[in-house]
Image (tube, rainbow, N blue to C red; front, side, top):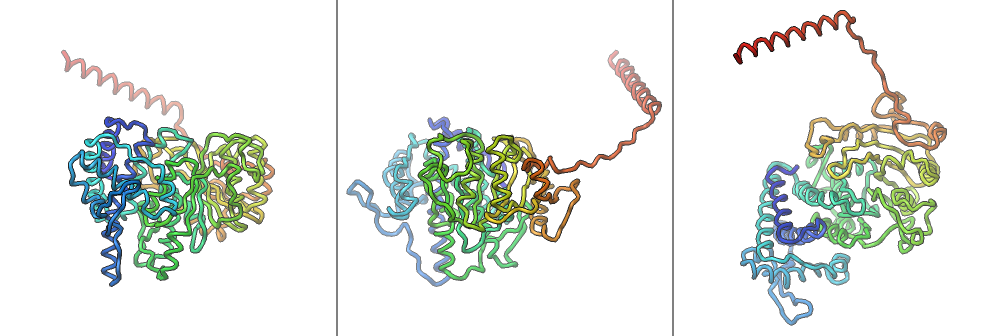
Length: 518
């Protein structure tokens, strides 16, 4: 959780960029991300060196040696490219140094052949004023001091930095760009518990945005491979671990960090932000590509073991560019993405996907065809209905998580009616004490033993025949029963006596006020 001081610092950072001439939220967050990346690289390099020395090994710093600035004959000492070095410069000198030396350095960080360098090739550092850069560097340093305070209070660095990033990225979502909504990290965490990604599976998000689901899957796997003595319950009541101490084979770590996570997005800026986000969280070589996964150019069928996604809810695609492998005759992206996910899974692969409620009960032929596909060519295991406030402040849409396995056939579907996710459902989204998330995870994992047929409760099963008879409707309200309790009222004469007594008290109060005012 971000404290109020951190939120104030982030808001101040936005204000500085706005007044400094960078008003577009997406442009601002990209430039801020570059600075966060530069700051974190310096810190990560120091940490890796300390870990290597503690283990008795060797570590070659990324800031050791010389750097030949591309397209120039100038060679600089890499030590001068550290955040801790250039932050001490004056405004004009700092701006020139970061633009001409530091930024070209991070653009080719992992070598020309790597995904990061490829997508950074057309990136531009456009902070226009020395004063803006100095102010931004100062605020970011203060933010990282606050992060360290949070770490000392037992919140992990990754979680606090994730909160910071989410708070920054909320500006993108509020701008309504491409129908993209930031998925809260605790919802991602719940979905990872439902679909349970594990080693050595290949995990994908076909509309990855900033990489939140891929990062969530990485952290889930780390938790699953952390010893009991290092596990703890987080603020959402779910188990977390950050050490991954059960993974002792370096080859497995290499596989996890380089060949496990795959993401696609059609927006080049989002791809760059996603790459930086994953690298900063320890996924050294993320596989994120700029690609429209609904188009004819994309062909990654039957490839992935696990898919986690919150694809765009609104919008349509040119019919002439729709991938020919789709079964649905529609241009609606919220339907085509589910079709894409089914096609991309291996047989037996698992998926947890957020969909707008309309997908569950829409009456068009394409809506019904998709639901029939989920129930007959997949095993639709569960539908978790979420309250509409989950995506506030930037969207009030009602949504659900569908969980399914490719192949097989559905016999019954487990429904859960989530009433609270642990945060207020208004625009503020303040933390509250009650949350359904631990119960959802617990009941999901024990659902095979629990044959609950009581539909007045939060969770229950519905057989496939009943769903088919209801035109493949998957909305929980179709099946949930509301238990009405008879309310006993006082007799009319008792109610009238109470009203008369209240009225007398009001009149007496008015008389007293009149005496006082005379």
